[in-house]
Amino acid sequence: KDSKSGSAFTLEGQLRGDKGIRNNAENDVSSKGDQYFFRSLQLVYGERYLFALGLLFLLASNAVSLSMPSVQGNVLNSVVDGDSAVFHRWVLAYLVLSVCSGLIGGIQSLCFSVVGRRLSNTIRKGLYGGIIVQDVAFFDGNSSGQLTSRLTNDVSFMVSPIQTMLGTLLS
Image (cartoon, rainbow, N blue to C red; front, side, top):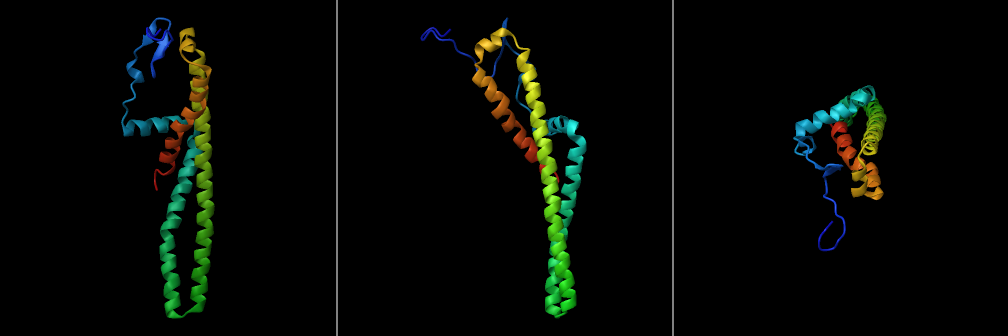
């Protein structure tokens, strides 16, 4: 209890148990970027096949995007040369590449979105399981609103950079 106001207070970011505040070196949040990346890959491991499919479509999307300027150049060259048959062929090729790029990009985005949502669900389940096994003192120091916020908002904020990082890995 606070001696001035007489109200109970909690220390932000501290784990509390029946024997007081727990000091774990594992809870230190001083991780580096490569550790974050490898931890993200560990979290995604359960969805490795869908993630691999997303990476495959990411590679395909990049390949199509890299071929587009060459086709555009060929369209312009056929205009300069005045050959309408070659022009129509290159315009058709450009149209096919554009449609393929859109479809491949959409499938890639879908794969990474599903992986992200499943990852979010997995983390929420793990967090909920961790909350349920806490001592009674933990629930005395945390309101149900704080715990609900941790299950919804904080997990979303945590998964969002993972989705972004893994989705743009090869781009």
